[in-house]
Image 1 (cartoon, one colour):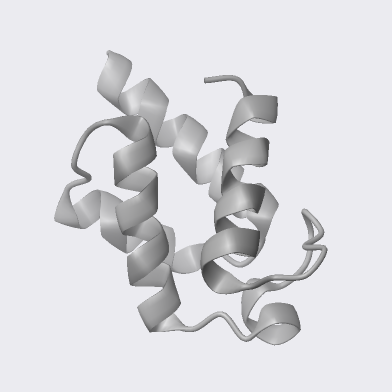
Image 2: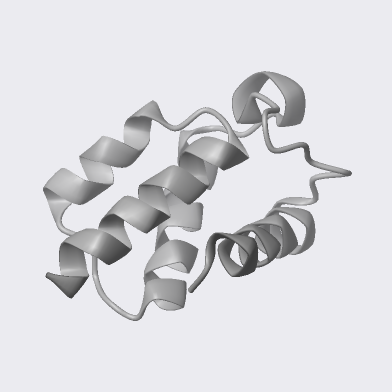
Length: 85
């Protein structure tokens, strides 16, 4: 998936599933949208569905530093790269 496709999918998930309104790519998910750790777990499950594979515990732990949509996109791209090799 291209970054534009990932962005469209992630923004759609955040709007439809987490009720974000007009999320910006640099918005702080927690501060600007009230995103919490339970939301993060749910989002990781959606990301796994989108990618078509299960993330390892270590890969999920790496997601804990995510703060923005841009961070999510970077994370997904790195997971795609890691699983294609």
